Length: 290
Image (cartoon, rainbow, N blue to C red; front, side, top):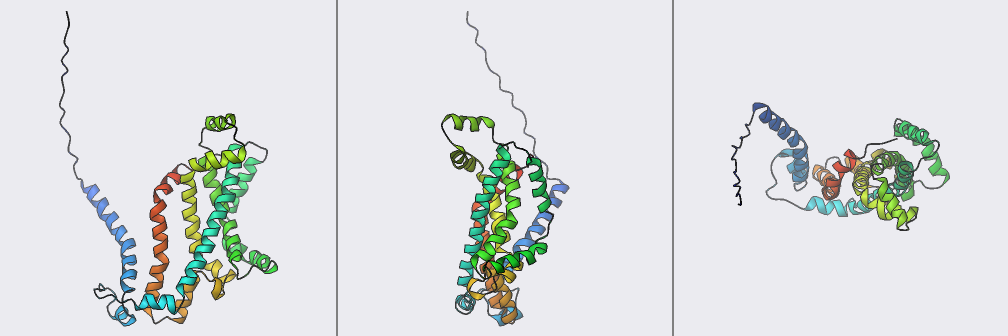
């Protein structure tokens, strides 16, 4: 005798979420905060399509009849394209060097146990407390003795050294979360230490590398203080130093200044949009384990 069991589906009422006053207040505050960030960027881009007179008279008016004279002057009059190339060369090189040396140092600190490891971590944390201004004079003297002032290397090497500590701590914290079994399996497959670093740890640690790369690029790209001291010649001048020159030499041409600022910010936003998904994951999972 077969027994047929009939399944009974219990229909439960779906509770509707109530839009509380607290949620409404939170959305209002967040929207207002977003506008304080988005509107200044829109204001700059909008004024870059106006003449200097229109910027002074109607700076908040939308440019329905845009003019391109400011962008033509930016590339012909002040040669902003050259400064673009200089910034990309120096910031990109600093990012690559930081990722290479920082990744190797993080791999050693996170996967090896040796005497003095905690001391190294303590030194790394202590270096974060040293302000960059305190190292300008000795760094400048070293650059003069090595004839690196007003060269690409004169800014790449100091920025690489200044960002290494941050990169090591973030990447080492992420690598410390990788299971030991993956490392043992790679040893069984015949991988040496270098192959294991390149084929195993680098792909798994991509979120941390992406987080480090965007922060190092931003800090290097926006480092006006070092640029004014170490590379003040026109042929190697980065774009942030060019903005300083525009504000002093072309102070009345507000349209040109708005264009230069817009051209400076846009590349950073584009790079951020491409790798932003890795940043949160890389920072949240990158807690340092000493």
